[in-house]
Amino acid sequence: MRAVRPDSERELAEALAAAAAAGQRVEIRGAGSKRRMGGPPAEADVVIETTALCRVRQYDPRDLTVSVEAGMRWGDFCELVGRQRQMAPLDPPCAGQATVGGVVAANCSGPRRRLYGAARDMVIGMHYATVDGVVAQTGGMVVKNVAGFDIHKALIGSFGTLAVITVVNFKLAPHPEHTRTYVLRFDSAAAAAAARDGVLRGPLQPAALDALNPAAARLAGLDGYCLLIRAGGPLPLLERYDRDLKDAVRLEGHAEAELWKAIEEFAPSQPFVVRVGHRLSDLQAVLEAAPGACVSRAGTGISCLAFEAAAEAEAWMAEPSRAQWSRLLEWSSGPAETYWPDPGPELQWMQKLKRTFDPAGVLNPGRLYGRI
Image (cartoon, rainbow, N blue to C red; front, side):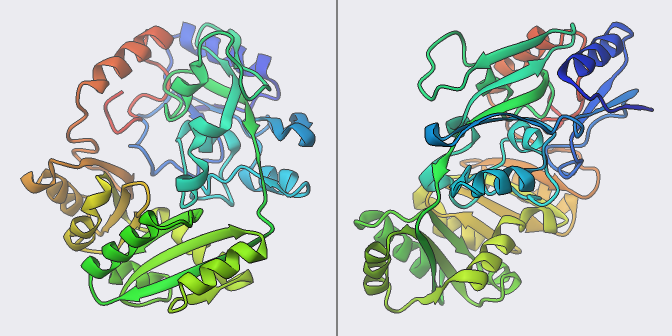
């Protein structure tokens, strides 16, 4: 297997075109922090690494927009915009090692998705290289850009199976003045779900609203069923949270940061993790159905369930009572037979996109849960 580390978009596009013309299978790799995520890539003939593409293309703090190359480390990107008290609050796993392109290609998001949205809400444009050696552009540096097709939205979450992301343009958000996290503990999943319902019906809109079952709570240094509420804003707003959540444990500063770091890194720290999409009203059922640790985005209907072995995860996904929920074996420490048991009709559209962008199927074969 040959490794190539291009220093420019043009070099990358040429390397990609040469490999495709020779019929060689190509693995696209940033820092490699998410090789366990989304299904394992098939053995490749050429590895194209993006980490040399790590420059800032344009940064307009007053416009809350920034353009950076895809190989920049996510941590360096956050430090760059953080100097202006700005952020792209995706909270991805593996944040210390991941690249910007990898975060976007895997469509990573975390606890604050409830308030700020996912990558498709923050990415306003990108450059990408195709298998025929073309460097193309989609979107731009304007938040309300209506020119052309939003091709970048198709590339987000494609795991490098369509094209190689080389530059990403973000719209940013200002850092809140202050942040606090409130931890509510319960003896049952029903009580935790009822408290979550109360928050959703109330006047306050926290940035994050996560629920943990007891096994996940222990991993975070807590106990019981826990509801985590993350708030940000001026002090008068946080004082309102203090009054409404007077029975909660309040965390700030280092303790708050460490708790959310543990939550964000939950999935990559486990041998096998099934990602479940469900109705908000099913929170109690999901927490109770988890045989091991479970972290739920209780305000968005996405839960992550940990398993020790692939066979256990596959058996859990195959149980007929789970058919009402979408299920993906998202993180895997070893081979599995099934990563995506019920892809549904959207798989046909994904396959059509794949044939349009990559007719020979040379880009990251095997990714996207073994279906593309």
